[in-house]
Length: 282
Length: 294
Image (cartoon, rainbow over all chains, first blue to last red; front, side):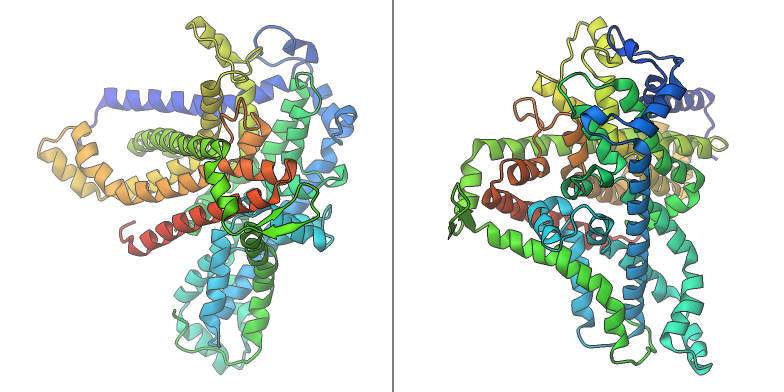
């Protein structure tokens, strides 16, 4: 065994505690700021200890929003984000499962061609084709709708590859047995393949949900109607809306609410999250 | 490419199964991309009435445009800064956490969650901390005699967006480095220790070289992240300013297309960006095929 160095361990703990402090600090500051009355931010340095206004601030952002700056109540934006994240996640998972199934369990003309078409999506993130994608969505009349928020983002090469790889490891005998017993392809898919993939599906679900929730550029482009604002993009409106200094106590309350759902997902499903993250990127 | 040894035979079902994915890809990925390619050869007059085919003129103009060249430089420094900062901090944390036995999981939990924070939110958080009038960091820096102001100083603004972008990416790098460290055989390290190599020497001559495949992989992923996923960081905080100091390529495409409505130039920029993504993706995938250990 390698030598055990007490001072070294102490040093490592110190580095890590400092590291964790730095990593946690921004969110700590946000939580603290969201509990203060507006007056705190006019002068001096931002507070580092909680203030008395938490309930009032959160009630304000959830129910009223800042109507003057054009931001609707947060409640609606949270709901929009949730719907968009779920639609993207479920959409990505289902179309990727189906296409991986087709690619692994069938032989048909143009199979490789379709595989490359799906692969191309990796090379064309929204950020590099902003204007023409916007035009397509506008021509299809999908601006300001949940369909427009989610459908253009549900193609997924990574999920398809992951499921393909996983299907390749499923023993051949299972399918032979299913065929001998007279099961058709869809029955095999539903009753054998899906139950076997459930851990992979769950792991990807965590990653995709975070991806969907954190979408920023896309909702920014295609929503002009506050009815459809999602919370992550709504924050930007609060920060830059109006010429004055942002109302920090309300902005930070919104930030906390916007960051909370994906953080909770990671904390409670850490094992699945790590699995999903390390396997999709391989 | 492989299939199963035995496959289902059905003439239409596989196409039906592929249809949703392929249709979405064609409509929302491939068609817009080809449009960008096409538009990059066109130019509209100022009233939008006449469109002319100008061959590579949009590209020539871009590379003669000091603003675009500036944006390239800015993107370069931003990507390098974000990648280096985030990866080195993450490697340090991973090496430290890897020494721990009982506390490993609790430290990991504390270090992974920033992954969940959207880039735009990460930007706003650090923007608040560095706010010149009430932020805590400028207050502390003033104690050291430095007058922080990212509204007027280009360097300060760049440092701010790099910190915000790197902070969010630490968790990702940390998880991969930790997985890499745990896959290094303990016997190698013990052998070196018996031969009298110090901890420091063991790290640089054994652990770090064995980590190099992961380091390279993470480098590509981080560059892609810094170039394409950080739109939110810039848009929610500095908006490219001050004086174009943080105007990264992705943000410039958006500005030129949606705010300045210069479609030809924006399309040409899109095409260049696509070229960059394609090169990076190819590097990433070629490399993954060869990766054996871990």
